[in-house]
Image (cartoon, rainbow, N blue to C red; front, side, top):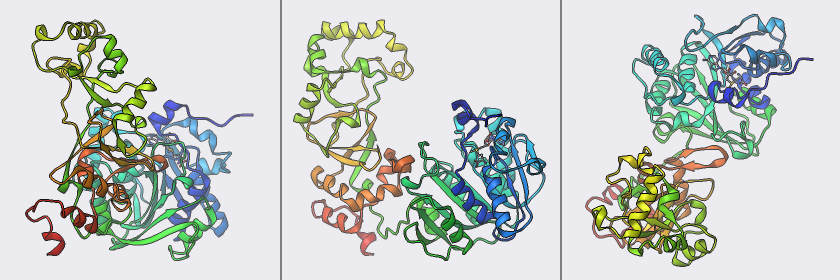
Length: 500
Ligand SMILES: C[S@@+](CC[C@H](N)C(=O)[O-])C[C@H]1O[C@@H](n2cnc3c(N)ncnc32)[C@H](O)[C@@H]1O
């Protein structure tokens, strides 16, 4: 008996070999074929899960079915039989690179789960070829940090027949990357976006991935000003397919949260993010500035416990209290007692901070420790060797607030009562003029925290990551901002937008 091909971790990374579960494949087939298409094209067909869903759909509707597809890897076709596809379904499957050598045809129905291959795995020559394809299609370049999946979207849209339909499931970073605005401006100006379907963590189609899946349903017809934006709460192939076939009219309140959005609002907010109707333009940047924490380049050397510092005889004026990982913070304040607790657990809480004095003028114990670092070759490490001298740490004022920027449900602002500096796992937040405590309370209000979704990047399991510039764009609701302004010195124009 032959066994199905099972992708190895390298096949997942280099070729994006992750199969679509049947319940999502059914929904994708329902959308693409419900207008009467009797064929389905999958340019990255893998084990055939999408084509098999198309075949089942056609069987239910008693129509003919023709499978069309490509894959770069012959081995994956082993899975066809198990999916219920037979020899006749393989006649139009070609082995080849879809982006380098796409079929010269257009299709009424295309379903794609493209290989999710990040841009740093795409070679320079290939990137240039892909860019020239983009130029020919969109009439402009796209940021080179786009992954392979982005090019699959552009190429598959290009191959849609008039009124043809595309179902495209992909990581939501396609809406959140640096290239996203250029990409979606073009898509939304050129095609009709019918619906976007997101998945709650409980209904994640790829539960082991560290990214969030998002399904786009797009038709090659005149763009409309509105589209359906829905969130799927649990697996239910039948109802989701019925909902799609009903033209998104049927209601399934326990299964789907559905809303109608305007294309203009959603493209400004980001298609993967919930709608944002902020009438004010107040953001965190109005009341604070943000910097990432310190990157040491060698935590084992620069970071230490009090006991290690005393053993090395390092003077306290050469050490700064420090927080080196988010897990060391268990609430929304960091105090001296928290540092003592960490020390009792053996966690380092001190960062070596050597002033810019000449080496000879440093205390002998510090000189010895620097020599120890050199004997370990630290001064030749990539980040460290850019510093002058190599052992002089990046400088940060003690931030009054810290922000834990990568979390599942616990992204929060932390009041820095212990005067620590954080490492780069945290962001430093510096209130501009109002009291740190007031800003801290305003930022930790659930209404403000909820807005993180509108500026952050979403990851698997509901995690979110917010970079410093994005955090400065965090909207602060009007009523919270007004409460804050009581303590703000008059800031020219701050409230003009709200009142005018
Ligand atoms: C995410 S899987 C999807 C497979 C299947 N369509 C599904 O939905 O379960 C992506 C597939 O793309 C294939 N692939 C990777 N690079 C490709 C390329 N340049 N051209 C065509 N197929 C490619 C991989 O071998 C893999 O089978």
